[in-house]
Image (cartoon, rainbow, N blue to C red; front, side):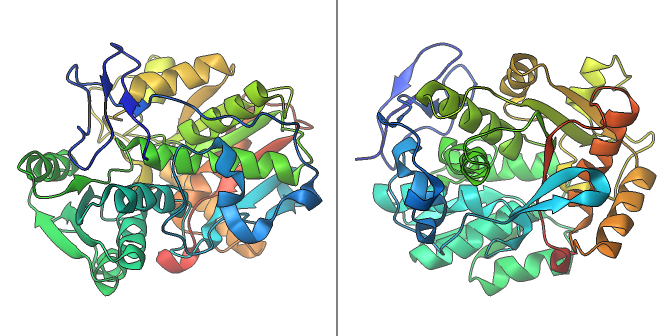
Length: 367
């Protein structure tokens, strides 16, 4: 049976079911009430059946495998030009790391008997939810901005999902989707709010540690919008530490797009009054002005001696060009984390010889 939900802010608990709330009465996001951990030593890598993909770590997951496309165990490769390692989460079935959350979210939806899922995203999350909903045989409606690029809508439509175009801002799109959820039109498969999505993205950390023989890096530099990968990584590394499989948690260093960088602006006392000043539209996939789990992101930064910085379009373009010329064909938003690695070193936050991993989050064919 699917796990119950609870609110870390006020302590309320909610039973699992197709009519479960998508957020707490107090307005905060919900998470799973219990966090499963294995009661055994960490296995040798050869004992892990990588054919199970990210579901090889089912002992850590509060969701049962129902809907899968064999996702997970993405390559971890040396990036000598950056003195780092890149984890290639751009090679998932839908072309982005969002498949980590989509497989767990649609597995939970299927287990609960959900018939229709709703999501608001014109990008990678919308494509991933649409694709895994198709795999599950569940109807999907993806709320998108009215001016969404046709190239971004193609993956959604071709998976059989229904795009619902909404006039106005990105926030207006979310509000329209939430209104539909509240009206009973479907189950909210939100990559920002649904706890099952974060159960999936935490497997980034589990895979990474396993691929390094249970040694974690000094730091992980990660793109930061709603924090789906950032928070997932934090939860995964914490779970590994609590299970006794690793002995440390790496610093988590986030990278946001200049002009829409609420976490970085707050940490570095920037003026958030005009988000159009110096706006980085190259990294459009992380332009999130109001992250749903902002407090949790801040806690993850503070709990790992981490940070968040905002980078401009020029730095992102330069990193993207360099990535392409060295064989890493990724979409523009992926490049912002690599640009962030250089920025953190230039600012003295990271030593040149620090052991660092950077996820490459989306494939270049999605551009």
